[in-house]
Image (cartoon, rainbow, N blue to C red):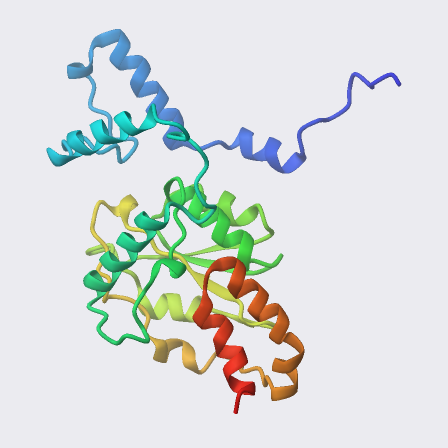
Length: 255
């Protein structure tokens, strides 16, 4: 079969994305070029939020330990899809301490944690799981320009709301007004990231459950519905190692 020389291999969506590729990245690459030409001390690069603060001294010891283990059998082998279990457990405990979670039923555990290679991978995976075509992602501006691409991959629409000019804190009323409801209940997803503003996000400064309660839709899930899906629930719980989730279904039929 003869392939047409004019056959288009790259989709129109990706072509448009390439044409409007991130100016932040272009500036970063230009900065590297200028540093090579004039020297690093002669160029001030404010393009990317590249961390230039040295890591804690213990980082060196940990990296040396990892390097020593890397030459052992399976030292660089695959890990579980959700990440190394010990790391997920440590991260869950860190979240519990950071958020001050004391209630045993509400505490985060390793089953709630999925490790990704960077925030971009986490966001794309999250959007893939929750976005339907036409769903909106509400985001305070200024924001990382790639957000539009991340949600656009799956038919999502980025909807920006200007932050407060005096301190770049989120405009809560503006965000609330931007939220719309759809057939699946809450159609909008709130996305917030503060690196574009040079400030630090306050974990307690944001929308509360009360802001969303009036927009929630509730689904009636009867005992008959649960009985029909019980096998699926227990199967997924077994695969994911979430025994308590599986028992949540079976315990209702043990009485």
